[in-house]
Image (cartoon, rainbow, N blue to C red; front, side, top):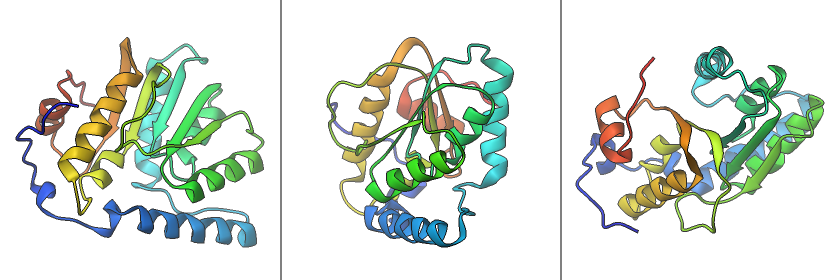
Length: 196
């Protein structure tokens, strides 16, 4: 892993419960319990408009419906579920919360899409070799990682290394952030960005 560089972003100096695994475990534990009682979910991280923009962009720009797509920090799997409803078939989600993954699987099955694959993995730690994907999605996960209260630079670098290991030469990395500017993301990830 590369040595930490000066990627000083205003949020690096602050921690939040959003950067803690215990927060996400309790959130998804509560959400799966509510789902078991009510049969629906209303927690959409960054909101449905953000998901719609991401899904619409993919639908307008990606014609190959079997493109391999992974959602990093997939949470309840809502983004992948929306892509599956648009007939994308090669969908994968990863989250470090077992509760999130359990809920995402249950949510997908309840919507008759048991073919979406979900895995528990902590993207802020060294991982074994990743499968390569055509599209890598991040909807606020890097933001949450940036709010960790300990080893934040190291966690961000492991996340970056894991993302890079998932990308092919012609892959797309689609990231939504409310805490980082486009310039900061370009500097940190070292990739050219297309801003819509």
